[in-house]
Image 1 (cartoon, rainbow, N blue to C red):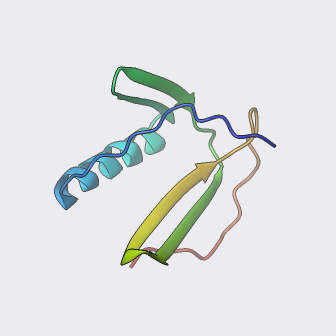
Image 2: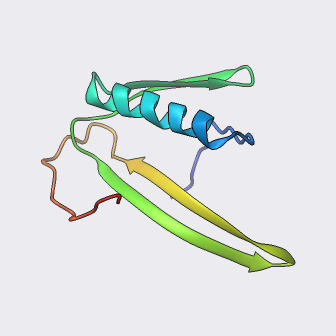
Amino acid sequence: MPEEVLFKSETRQDRSEIAAHLRDIAAKLEGDGELTLAGGGESVSMSVPATATFEVKAERETGSGPDELSVEFEIEWADGDDRDAADSGFAIE
């Protein structure tokens, strides 16, 4: 299935700024689930359902230069999906 990018932002920020964004997202998820992403003259609003799939991935990219490490957090759901949550046993320590 083709992927359509609705919004993308990539900026270099210090850890405290990144943490502030994650806290803002967490507060929205704990609240009504309404997220609006804005930047660079673009914006998109989405409503995250009560249950969704949460994916966490840690990667190391190697190649022509220094290795690049990343942690990716993804929340995914089908349009209109609101299935019951399943316990994944996942924790951030």
